[in-house]
Length: 84
Image 1 (tube, rainbow, N blue to C red):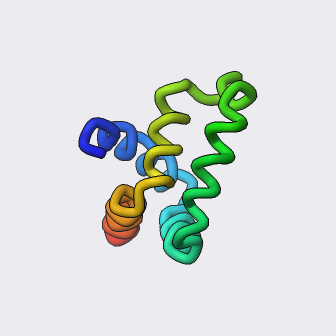
Image 2: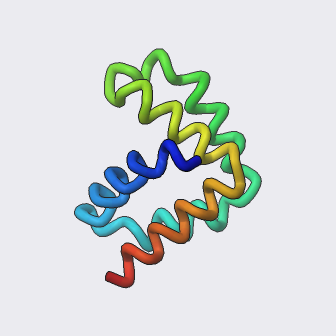
Image 3: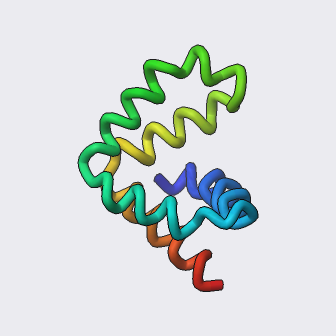
């Protein structure tokens, strides 16, 4: 988790630019245990998604979704960014 937080900050900057931080935080929070399914989808679609996103971002996103502690930490960062 610690090693991916620099990527999280980059993602959050982009998400803030689009104004989606509250929406994404709510969606991740509501998804609960289904985030693990999202991680599996990323792993399965990785060969196709590599044309759009770097491999390190895909792996970091999948790890974020499959580890509940990481998901909650990311949600907290999103909500903090929304307050700023």
